[in-house]
Image 1 (cartoon, rainbow, N blue to C red):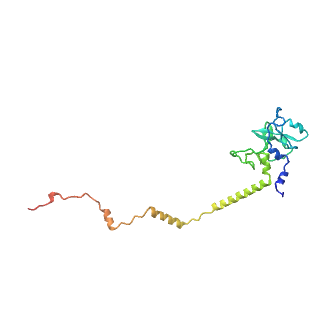
Image 2: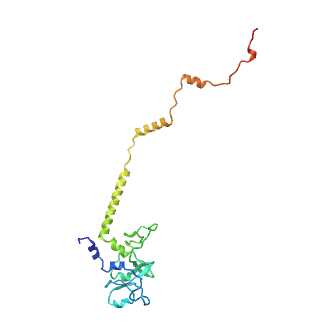
Length: 225
């Protein structure tokens, strides 16, 4: 595989990290199902053979192992344990039961809270301070070559779209005063027709008032015999 391929990204991390993140913890141990406290919350970094219970550790005495804990139904690990084997810089830490922990995998979040200015570079979960990732899983994804390349491509596409939008909307529209005046005149002629000038006939007709007809009185009529 060439430079920058998946193999190079895999070599950046210890071989046990990805299997650890894919493992299901807090299930009952199949080998010690009849024993008390047989819940699987341990993991051997040397064997990488799945989740272990406290009784299984008898077979891993000289090995490196870590304990997984839970917070709000999500797997966490204490910083004091994991930082001995892994660089966790950039990952958000939390204080649970007076101990600093980091989450193994991302936690879905519908939308960032109001006023949040810093979010996970991978899943957009709200973060505090200057952390880049919300979990170990997001750090693996966010620092991979493919993710960084895709991120740059999206940023360039966004900048190009913004530039096109600003150039197309920023051009001042050329005003055509003649067309505007003609349009205004057309509107005036259409909706407010001018009154024709009065003619002589129209003038007399307009000045004449229609009165009540009068008949000549009978006394005024002279009849000769």
